[in-house]
Length: 112
Image (cartoon, rainbow, N blue to C red):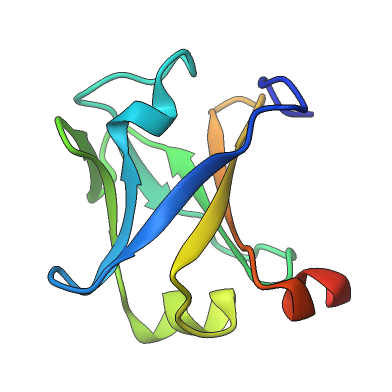
C-alpha cells in the first residue's frame, strides 16, 4: 500500500555526471521523508525491474539537499533491467518506510 495519492507520479532521473539515479528532493516533498534520512538496498526483493530502498539509520544511501542519490552498480543495473533516463518512485507504507524505484520503459512495465 502506498502512502501517496494514486494521481501523483514521483520521478527519478538518471544522473550521467555522477553515474547513478537521483530522486530530486522536490519529488519527495510531502512524503514524510526528510534531509538526513538514510537508506539501504533491500536484499531478497522479488519485484521485477525495480530497486527497493529501506529506511535504515546505518544505511549508505543518504537523503541530502539535492535528494537521494543511488550509485549505479552492477547489482542496481541488473535489478532495474538496464539504464534508463527516467524512473518511477513509489513510497510504500511499511515499517521501515520503503521506496520502490521502477523503470518507466513501456516494454518492461508490460512484463512486470
